[in-house]
Image (cartoon, rainbow, N blue to C red; front, side):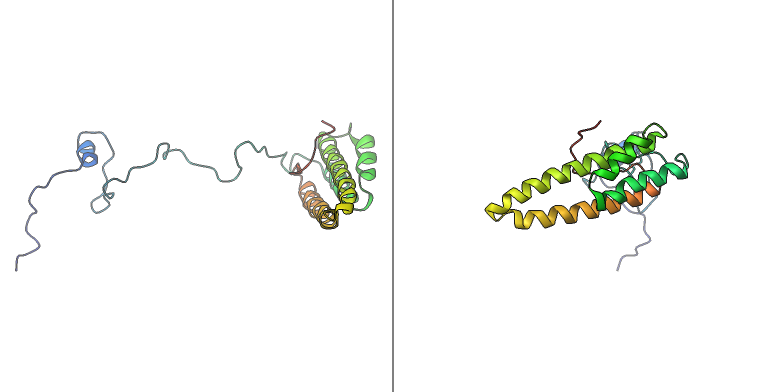
Length: 170
């Protein structure tokens, strides 16, 4: 049996090892070589943030929004569950000049409730084709779920934007 402590004979070096010796790459500690053909993806040096998807803007932080503004923003969404677009419209018209957060959340709640009203009317008309019997409860459930999510976010001081809303008021 041959001893394993003998010095190994020189072997052919891969392109990445040859490039590393010539200054083309960083040296790796012994025993951590990459398998042949494995390369780092382009841009691997840059840290990737998984917090926000690209194109999504985060609303103002909770510290920047006053407690009063958060309460009125929350009420825009919460009362919409019970009054449709009436409460968000009244709150938005009365309070929109007091704080940009109230203006933003009032418009969001109002736009969403107008969208829900249109979807409800269309679903009701489709009841004659038997499709509306399925759509009408789905619209109601989506309204309640999205309003609860928006209520919680607005109370935290985060500007919430409904995912399925037609922007009538900009």
